[in-house]
Length: 122
Image (cartoon, rainbow, N blue to C red; front, side, top):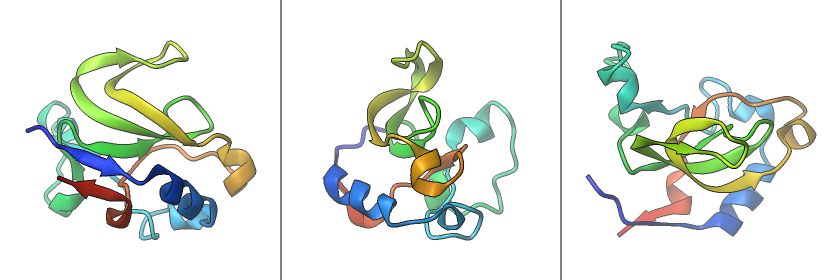
C-alpha cells in the first residue's frame, strides 16, 4: 500500500516542543506505535492494540533514529542506512527534535504515531 501524505513539519515541531516526557509514556498524549513487522516477523500479539496504532508499510511515524533525537521516518520493507551509519527498516525523512535530553529532560526510546492534525493523507 502506498500512502501519499503531507506532514506539517513546522507545526509538528512547535507542538512537540510544548510537550513533556510524560506525554510520550503509555497512555500519554502521543500514542505509541507498533509496526506491522512486529506482528509478521516477531509474532507479537497485537490483538489488544488498536489498528490505528499499527504502522503499515510506507506510513510515516516518529522514532528515536539518530540517538537523542525525535525524527520522522517512513516504514519500509527495505533496509536503509541512517546518516549515522545505523541500518533500519525505515527511510529517514528529517529530524524534528534535535536534542530530547534538553527538550524533555530525558532520552526518548521507541516509536510514536504522528498526531492526525499534523499529517494529511491525499
